[in-house]
Length: 329
Ligand code: BT5
Image (cartoon, rainbow, N blue to C red; front, side, top):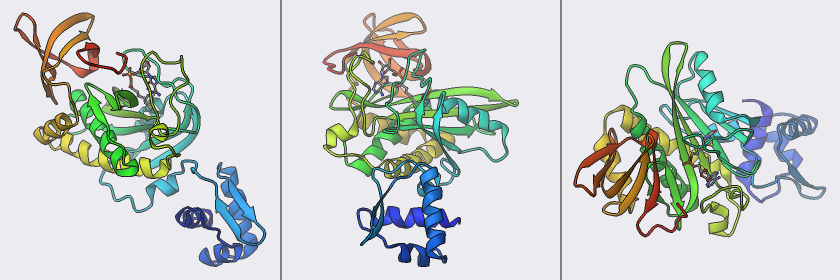
C-alpha cells in the first residue's frame, strides 16, 4: 500500500478527530517530512485537510470519492473487485463499457464526480450537480451466463434501495422499472445497457443516486429529492458506495445464478404498484390496465382493460400515469 493511501485511511477512520503529524508519520513508517509529502499528494488527488498547529490534521467531510477508501475490506465476489474514480467523464456507462477491452475488467466499478453527458433511459438526461452525488457504472462481462436486461434492472434498483437503507437509514420504495423513490420523489435511477465490445456481450449497470444534491429546480420534469434533504445532514458517499457495491454484488449474483424468484419477491416487497391502474408506453404503443406482476425475465405483467395480459419489457417501457401517484409522472 502506498504511504498516502495509509494516511488517507487513517484520517478517514478518525472522523472528526485530529491526528498529529507525528502519529501519521509513525503509522506509515516514515518521517514527518514524508507524511507532509503524502498529504500534498492527497491534496493533488482532490482531498482537502483542515490543519491546527496545536492538534494536527483532519480530513474535510464529506470526503471526495477515492478508490482506496471504497475498496478497503470490501469483500465482494464480482461487483466492485476493482474501482476507478474520475473527476469528470461524459458518462460512466461509456467508460465502463470501454474498459471491457482490458484484461480482468469484469465487475469493474467506475465512478465520477460529474458527467458531461449523463443519460437516463430512452434518450433522457441524468442531471447531477458535481461533487455531490453517486454516479456509478458496473461492467459485467456476460460470458458464459446471459444476464437478462429486465432482471438486472430490477436487481440494481433493489440493491440501491437496500444500500440506501444500510448506509443512510432511509426507506425507499421502488417503481418499475428503474426508479428508487423517497416519499414519492425520485432519489435514484438505474440505466442498464447492453454493449458488444471486442466480440463479447457486456452489460453495464449505471446507477445515479442523489446523495447530497437533487437536480436544480426546472432542470427535471419530475419530483426529485436528495438523501441529505431527507436526513437533514450531508451523506458520506464512501459508505454509500460501499453499501451499493455489496448489495449489487449480492443481487447480480442472484441474476447470474438464476435465483429470480427471490429477486422478484424482494423487489415486490418494496413496491406498491401491484393492482394499481397504469398507463405504460412501450416501444411507441400505449397500454392501459392493472399491474398484475413483475417478472424478472418478462417485465411488467399488465392486465389490459380488454382483459388481455401483456408483458412489457423494462428496456422499452415507461410509466406515463399511475393511479394515486404523486411523484409527478
Ligand atoms: C434513469 O433514467 O433514472 C437512469 C439514471 C441513470 C443515471 C446513471 S448516473 C451513472 C450512469 N451514467 C449515465 O450516463 N447514466 C447512469 P430515467 O428513468 O429515464 O430518468 C430520467 C428522468 O428523470 C429525466 O427525464 C428527468 O426528468 C429525471 N431526472 C434527471 N436527473 C434526475 C435526478 N438526478 N434525480 C431525479 N430525477 C432526475
